[in-house]
Amino acid sequence: MTAFVKDGFAVRIPNIPSRYRANCSKDYGLFVHGDTKDKSSRDAEKQGLTKGEYVEMALVCLQNKTLTFEPNYINEPFTEVWGIPTAGEMKTQFSANASELSTFLLHRQSMDNLAKLVEQFSKNAFDEWVSEGMKDDYNEFAITKATEYYFTNIFRFEFEEVKGKYTYYYVKSSFRKAESKIEKSACLIAEEIYQKYQTGLGYCVDNRLELNHKQSIKMTAESSTELVK
Picture 1: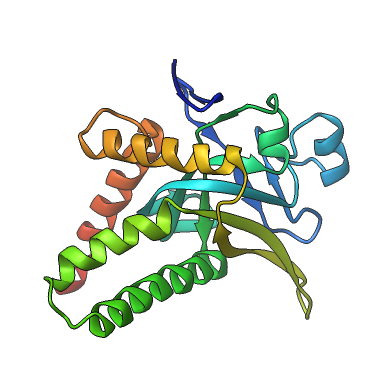
Picture 2: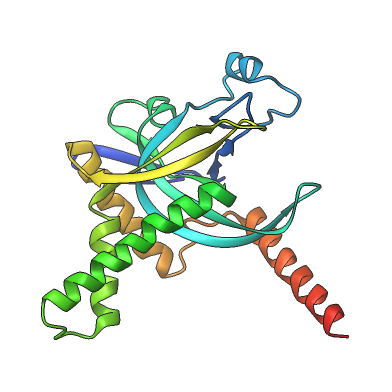
């Protein structure tokens, strides 16, 4: 186990990834942790498997994955979110000045909602580049601005109910400036973890999910080859 500390705020990096699941079914609309199969949301909550309707976090990184979870999801795109919880039950399970690198997957509408948010960052960076006279290389400018956006903001992921013929939930994404001392410390640690992840130190990696991703990509490639034949 590794720990990062900034201004009295400590973040644990677990040896086994602390993975949560966004359960968007009508009975839930909650983040869950552990095996909730065949359990009602009430039973899951009694057993300590639920972790609330929202989480706020300092974002470390986003990764695109193609994954298979039979029988419902075969070679489907997901976004893997890694971050440091600063509010919500993922955070309050720790003491006030502590948290843990955590991760969960977003899919379909939840994934698309986050993608729109990230795209807005790109548009904002482009506008700033133009307004400043387009003097620097755009790609370098965009990377610098993306770093500012990601590591100075707190991201909120919250379940939103969708009513209709089939009522369900999706995870709505939003962000705001880091305000409290803990939030700012979490953002500094998030950036440090991301930099170490970029050097290949193994942070933000779930080996079981990586294997799933590689196998799903292989299956997709083989299916494409068969179609060509």
